[in-house]
Length: 379
Image 1: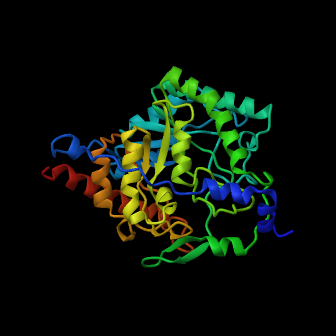
Image 2: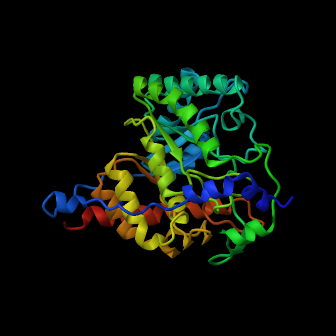
Image 3: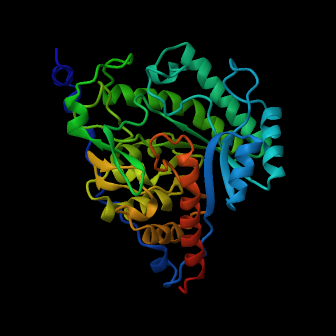
C-alpha cells in the first residue's frame, strides 16, 4: 500500500490536520516599550555557541572570537552510562575556565536530534518500557549533575525524524545550502521508520510520559530543561508515518502548558520556528513575544531562513534571509531575554570539511555587531 494513503486509512492524517493549524492568532503581547512608558530594558542577551564534546581545540577556537557563553558536553568515560558524573562535568568546566569560557548549558546524552532509525537509545521516543523508564532515570540523573555543578540548563529533543530536508541548492559564493519542499519530500514516498505510524495522540502520550517524570526533578533541583521544536513540521498527512506535533505553534503552546513550570521550556530555534510559519517575516516577532513574555525561551538558535512552511531554504547566512534580524534582536530586548543568542547550521562548501568551521566566525561577528549596535541605540 502507498504509505501516504495508509495514513488516511488509519485516520492519522485527519488527526494531524486537526492538530496542524499554526495557531498564531492571539499571540501578540504588548511590547515592553508600551509597558514601560516607551523605554526598552537593557539588552542582556549573550553571544553563544554550541558544539559537541569540549576539547582544547574547540575551547581555544570559540574563545578566539569573543563568545560569551557556550553549550557543550563533557567527556563521558563510560559509554554505557547515559549521563555524566559531577566529576566529568567539573573537568569540562575546568577546561572551559582555562579559556575564560562560561558553560551555561549542556546537551543531553539521550534525546538527540537524530533519526529514530539511527538512534542508539530510542526507548523514550518508541515508548518501550521498561527501558524508557531506565533512560528517563538517566535523564533525571543528568539534571542532578547539572545542579551539583552549577549548570542551569539541559537541552534535548523529542524527535523521531531528526532534521528533515529534501535537497541542496547553491548558496552565496561557493556554498551549498539545504532546503525543504514538502511536495518533493512526499513524492519520494519514503518508508516508515521502525516507529511505524505515530499519530498525534501517540506522540503526545510519549511527550507527557516523559514530562510528568522529569519536570518534578527539574523543579526540585532548579535546572531548566530546554526542548528543541521539531525541524520542520510535517505536512498534515505526516512524513514517514510520523506527525511532528512540536512542529506547529499550537503544538509548542500545548507543550509548555503540560506540567507547567519555570524550569520547562524551549531551546528556541528561531530558524525552525520560522520554517513552521506561513508568513514568518511577519509572524515570527509575535511568536517570540508569546513564548518570551512567558519566560519559556531558555536559549535561542539565532538562524535565518528564506521561504515559509512546507517550502523553505535553511542553513543560509543570517544577513540574507527573510527575517529582519535587527527587529528580532529588538524583540528579544523587549521581552528581557538574558540567555544565549547562538549560530546554528552554517552553510557548507562541497569538498571542504572545514567550511562550516570557517563560516561560523562570520556569523559570530554579525550577531556581535547587531548586539553592540542595539546596546548603543537610544531608546
